[in-house]
Length: 517
Image 1 (cartoon, one colour):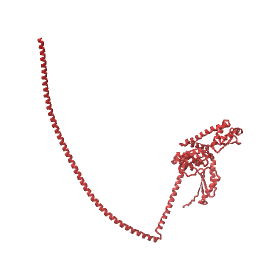
Image 2: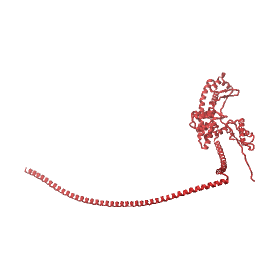
Image 3: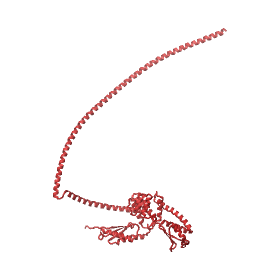
Image 4: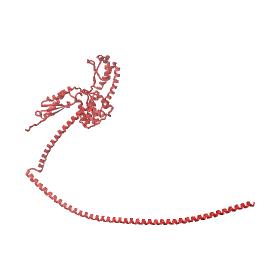
């Protein structure tokens, strides 16, 4: 019991001693920490004071440096201001000197101007004196020569004018001769080149108006019982059938070439079919008519395609196709128009003109012939109206109007089309005329010209389009040459048959020849 109490007392005493020891230890530790903290504070204060002193020193140094630099800049600015003041002063002084110089120059100029005015007055006075002397001299000259100034001037001018007229006339004559030679040479070269580039058949296709029969018995079948078949054919086609004693042939007669062609095809189809009666005739006519309308358009489109022409109205294409069924002096109108278009294109290319426009004008130049049997008027007038209706260009319209000389050509293309038309129509074989007849016509043309009294020689040129006549100058004078041309023209019109026009040119030339020995 006592030991337990003693142990508890010892434990309690030990606990308090431990607590006291811990308090003492903490006190000692806190005291040491405070001392250490105070020491650190003292060291920090010392360092802060040191840093403060260092910063103050650095600030003082920077202030000193800035002060020095500022004083230096101020000094430099003062120097610059001083130099600027010196320059201004020097400029002011130079301006003053210039002002003095300008004032001096103005004084000199005033003096010179005054001197010039005085001299001008003197010169005017001298001029007046010179004019008086000249007038006196002219009066003396007029008295001596007996001519006034105006008369003498007119004589001199007249003499100069005569001399200049002779020189000008001589120069113009030389240039005209050179130009004519050059133009003729170039024109011939160009035409020959175009004709060589374009080659067409000698004989063109012709429309046929005679239908061949396999035998004469077919005539009776075509006439039919009491003539009903022939009446039906004539009624539906609008074409007259002429059945005469000509063996194995029937002639078709109509003013409309297209109808004549439709009738021909219908009749030939009936003959091949063998069934000839009114109903069959009407069926075949309707069928042939539709086929021919398609064929007409094909002819027109083919011509446009071959020539490379585009943007043509559909109705105008049909009119172009109808030219295939028109002839002029046996020459197929469509083939002639295509030939004219090709030659026009070649000539336009040689001259640097619009080739496509030239071809278009050449193709449409005879478009009036497609309907001239239906409408009153010449094919030129009708063609012009058609071109205006389908809004063709003014150049194309003028080419149509002027290709026979009815209207003046207003463009080079119009002249080209007229030339191409003449070439196409007049070349050998283009129309229903053999080479022998063509040569004979040229000889007849020359013989007519040679038959006139006073004619020395004659030459048919340009494929019979022109005859050049050389007369004897000792028998025919200048006025007589006009009478010779008129007589030849009258005889040609009365004695020859020819397409187009023939130009008669009479040449009278007097040559004076001497021989120096």
